[in-house]
Image 1: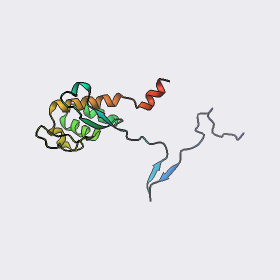
Image 2 (image 1 turned 30 degrees about the vertical axis):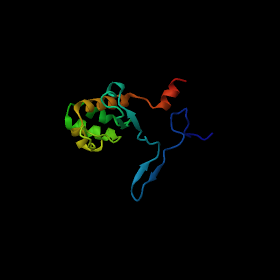
Image 3 (image 1 turned 180 degrees about the vertical axis):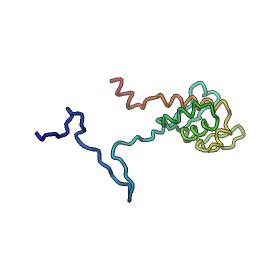
Image 4 (image 1 turned 90 degrees about the vertical axis):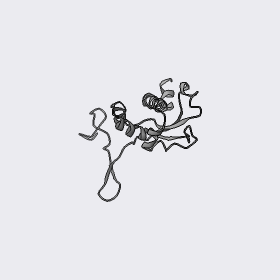
Length: 141
């Protein structure tokens, strides 16, 4: 046995993390990277009568800092968070048959009815506490 060699018993990592470069002078730490999980979701059942077929693509594992923005009580901060989290809709049309702006455009939140915006905020809040299917399967085993 090599004296002072790192072992699991000492709590010292068996291997040191490596560093790779992303070009001249830029260092990137090695290790796993969180992947942005985007999911298409239907509006909740209670909204289906008023908004049948409406779907949105949500950044399901959004950053925790955006949760604070949503709960800030400031309309501009809320809108800034929502345009990052609700990334797409499935071609929604307004009551005159005209397309809404993309969900990633701040104008979208001024164009849609308040009732629909409230439904989307509920979806966003639910997404932040929902585990991905792979974790649900693992926890039920």
